[in-house]
Image (cartoon, rainbow, N blue to C red; front, side, top):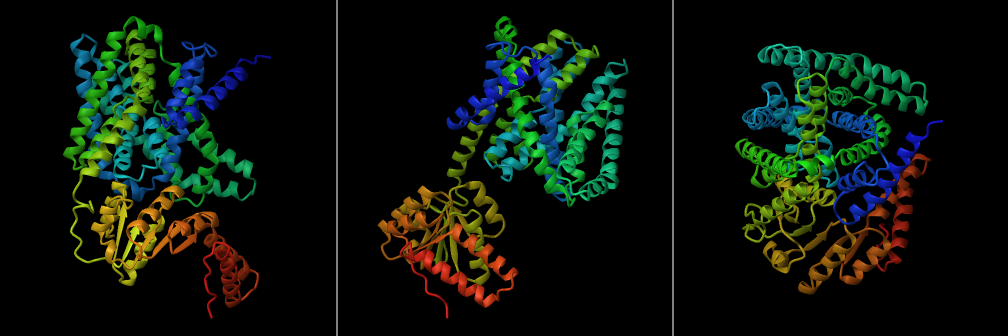
Length: 564
């Protein structure tokens, strides 16, 4: 029995289990951990795995599952809302960057067809890296996240005509004819997948769900993803795009949540495997032979892509901080470059030596992506801190707020909405500029500012406020904030969000007047609903819950009177 596949799997799992937690602990993210693990176990590390190409073919399904989930989460209304960024900024980035990157190859004597594939292949960024970094930082909903996602989405759409273009160029057709056929094939393939999903996919899932067999439903979900990917590949297009379109057809389906839940484990494991395969693909022998050329190509590529995307973002009205962050995040080349260059090589459009060189360049640009992303995030944050539009330290507060809300996450936003509906004046503070920008666009009276600073609180009108509400979801920062407020404002009532009874006790000791346990209130609501479902009257349930609440808070020395 041949066990080399089992050994490879064990080595990959061991590398991931060791490297990823270390890099996450160091604050460098999981992607870099996967990359380093791949380098260590690959041919140029300890050499535990030699069959990198076989691993990479399997690992590419991680990108397929990732794009499927993105498609499910991108319903048509959301895509329509992003249409300007997707089709204006996205198309401009691909076309302009592709042509600009083609020029150097032509100047160095690379044949026209190879130069075009090289330029446009390098113009594409890594969807896997970009989306994963944004997801880990919970930044997909921020302006930078939406902008980056829109550009990546168009790039994924562009893979289809580019792959078709490679096949057509290999048939000795003219360049103009090749581009025309590529666009036509794209439209036909996309339309076919949409029609299949709309009229056959949901009814099929309904039939499978009727069997009430969870294992069969999981199999059906995987079949949908791989089937759509296979169909697109069979017509010479991108597997990832097929999965993405299949996902979009399920965006408004009743089964979308269950399908995503079933696919997530496959996505996580295979995407990690993909990042490791990228690390294993680094050809250090080629790097040693042509080090200066490769370093120059990597630096030049990162610089050209970042500058072009930065300029395009600014021209389309994207903010300066967001533009810088997006341009650095997407300055690398991506996994679809491997596919393009590989296909171009096998069809004779591109020389093998050039394909290998470009593959090493792509891998190295992907390897530096986590650092580029962190630099972009840092610059965006520093620029946001210097903004004056929403900064409470220079803002003119015309009306002294009765209530100040520190923290504008989900809880803070709900409290602000209640106060706004009731006509009570309030002012909210948050030190996340993206949160502030989105909230003000929705009409909330929120400013950028660090509520733990006395001067910020003073500017916000804390001296005249009737109540200060703290809604932070971190334990230690909440306690520190209570200490700061109580030190400078002895009489202002402080209402603080606590995690549990122990945290509530510490907040009260620090100077809070009232501390509400979020775990208790959730338990009470669920328990009350369960009691009413079992025939207990609403009034009796209210008394039971109030008595339980009374006993709970008495343990924390904050008795609440039972209502009459």
